[in-house]
Image 1: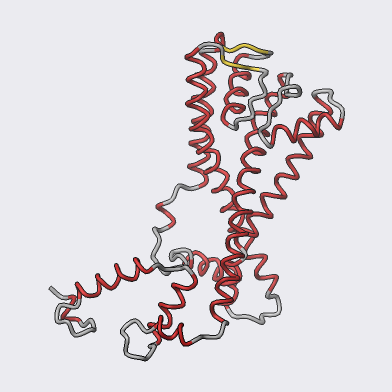
Image 2: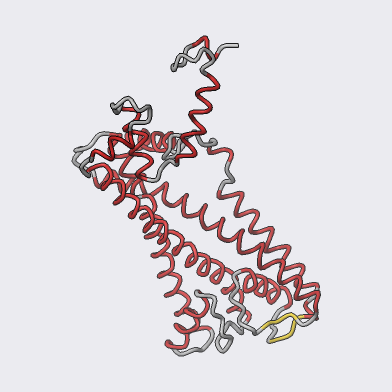
Length: 310
């Protein structure tokens, strides 16, 4: 029951962002199941379309439906081995449409999957970090939010390593490649280089590739997104720590004194520090103050019930 309480608290925490703004409820976002359905529909439509123009696609072919699905995935992930290529203008246009649609949908699908996995893991991990109950619920929640991106990055990194091992073993056994060539093909595929000298040529190999390529290429792209986000958060955290602990100067007091009364109120200090951290801009503060002045109908410098009542 303690875990249920922690999970409920985490969900409530997610209803507000870091700036305190209320976010839409969880029901307003597409669920992982819905994204999976959209991805399946995309693959189904792509397979049918490429199957209908299969005579306009040249290369090493095995089974019509399987080749169409394989070509759809290779196009969607931009691997482009070159073992199957469109010949006519219509087939080329069709490939262009599906590659842009597929990349966006695939990235969103992996992001939702990572969110789902992290939600399951973060409670267990944070609870283990505080096994001696040294911290209260608020500290645990802050710890979970702080390390959420790191959990996502490590999750995707482990998934990529697992997929690379599985792909290398499969190519070695079922595509009769040497271990080095299999690993080379895996690297060329995951990074979407797709030189074309090594690829999946058998029916079983292409069936495996439909799922493996989709997961591995998108996972790598998502890993770099999380890596950049992790670096950005770390940099922001260092900046915030420096701003909060550095010694104030006379110039700081003058800048923080917004009403020029030679004194800095708590509100002025908070605004100044938020600006220094880069969390709010001068324009945003001016917009908020304009909203305040519009509400302050009696120009008293404060808001009362009379100001906001019709």
